[in-house]
Image (cartoon, rainbow, N blue to C red; front, top):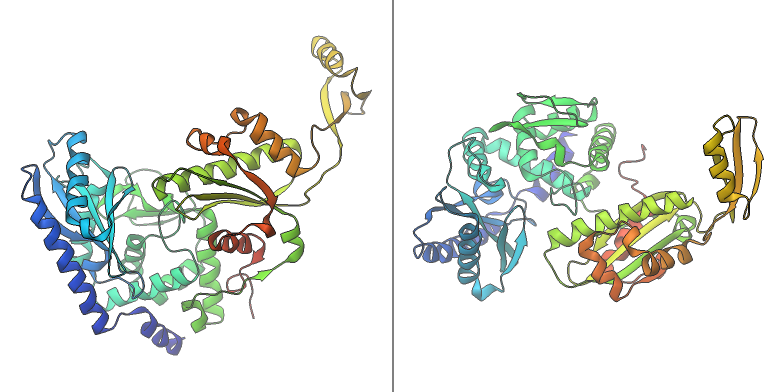
Length: 444
């Protein structure tokens, strides 16, 4: 294992040349922002945040976070308005655009490096006014707590998570954030100790010292806010992947865990039983559209289950430009034309009469051995393609599709076999939906 980890360090730690390149970008961006903030009396300071300043960034993932600190008396309206002006003016040469968290912030790209200009309030610890207010405290805490060796251990862990597709706290991923990797290495001491501990993780395990009770699969307390559970943002699917990847690595250490895998084992029969709903949407923040497509996929999965289709897996995805897609893996694309509906117990007079009156003309009925009146009823649709088309065209308001997506769906959508869906990001998501992750779900 020691040799594998040493090889992984080479992949996980940036070269001196790359460090200098990032430093140059950071200095350029910081000076541009600092020049703009002098125009506003509400700004109390500007500082770096995130993995760049903490020295925990990966060679291929080196965002630069610059925090604009506002006086705590600044109104929410001014907070948003001024921060966007600063962001756009400072980054105007680099095609800036708006991203959203709790508040909007400006993002741009300088020489293949993302630069985020993020507003926060200049508050005392614990007196948070926005979600970003904790970030400067996170930076200060980690700079004081992580040793140089630990920072490289964080990079190893980040690379491990990234290559196993479970790194990132954004809504599109719901995985393990950069800050959580730092908390884990600080708690356990090294990459290897983190992996060893996660491999043996028990349900509701607590990392840190909470001041109240939390009910999530893993509880990770924010070191600078004991009321905050960092584990709440990690999906059960990604936590499971983390545990299984850790177990697999402990049993059979390999450098492959630190390299992106591009050849999933696809089951063709599953591909045949997959369906997609494609649509175009009016461009909006990636954070917003990801939330909408995920909720839409979940809502349609519920509607399919109610109708009698067996949904095995589903996903909502987007290319973050103008195309969205909802994909579903089913036990079968068609189901029986009829289904059995349980009525009331025959001892309940009024309920029995109502059930019989509603169903006597169109369905066969009888009394079952369980004392219930049973009805054999015909489905509206037994073909998933026809069902989805009818639901989205004629019953959109009852579909559970988020309000923000309804206008886009109304303009048009296509229901088609998933294997016919085009677009790189969509094809990758479909491949993942119908395949086994051999890295974590096999033991050689």
